[in-house]
Image 1: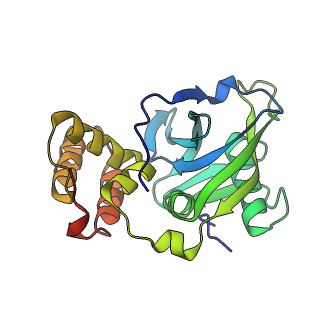
Image 2: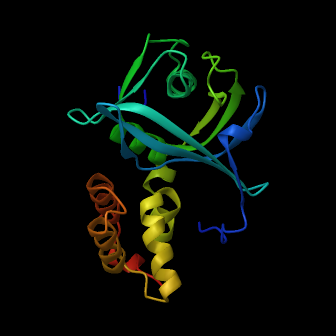
Amino acid sequence: MLDFGLTEYGDMEDYNTKFLNELSPGNEICGEIVVGEFKKVPMGKREVAEFYVIITNRENRTKWVSEFTTPYYPETDNIYGENGGLFYTFIDSLNHVVNKTPLNWQDNYSVNFSQFRKTVNESLSSVKVKAVPPVNPDARTVNLQVTDAVVKTESEKNKSLTIYDLAQKDPIILMAYANLRNKGDRITVKNITFELRSSLDDGVITKNAFQNALVELNQLEPSVDHQ
C-alpha cells in the first residue's frame, strides 16, 4: 500500500488555466498531478492550511487548479478532512483507488501533509477525477472524487532527474527556476538554492517549503546543472 500520510516538456505559459469553481457535477478531468506546498492562514483562534492540487492535461493543454483549505496542526504537521468535505472526498477516494480501501473508510481523516504531498508527487503519474455534488449545501464548489490513478513504476521513480524535472513537480523550485531564467542566469543547484534562500528571507516561501526543496535538490548530481 502507498502511504498517503496515514523528459522535458515545452513552455507551459500558453496553457489554459481553469479553477475548481468552473466545474459542475459530472464533469471529469484527468492529467498529471502535483500537490503544492501549503501556507498557514489565521482563521479565528487557530491556523488553517491552504494548498493547491494541480492536474495538468498535456493533450488539451489545460491546467486545473484546485485550492484546498483544511485545519492544520503544526505539532504533528497534520491536516484534517471532515466527512463530506472537499479534502475528505479527495483523499478517501484516492486511497480507495490506489490502496483498495472501502469508500468512507474512516469517519474523518487526519493526514500528515508532508507525507501526503511526497507520496502523490513522487508515486503518482496521473489521476482522473470526477466532480461530485458537495454534501454541504452552502459549499461554493463541487467535491473531487478520484476515479482512477496511475502509479509510477520503480524505473520511473528511480530515473535520473534534472533541475527542470524537479521544477515541473515542485512549484517552489519552479518559481526559482523561472526567476533565474528570466534574469538570464545559469541554472544550477547552487543558484537555485540561492534563489530559494532569498525567497525565504523575503517571506515569499515558508521554512518548511525551503527545507523540502533542498532535500529534493540534494538528490541531483552536479552533472545535471544546465542553462
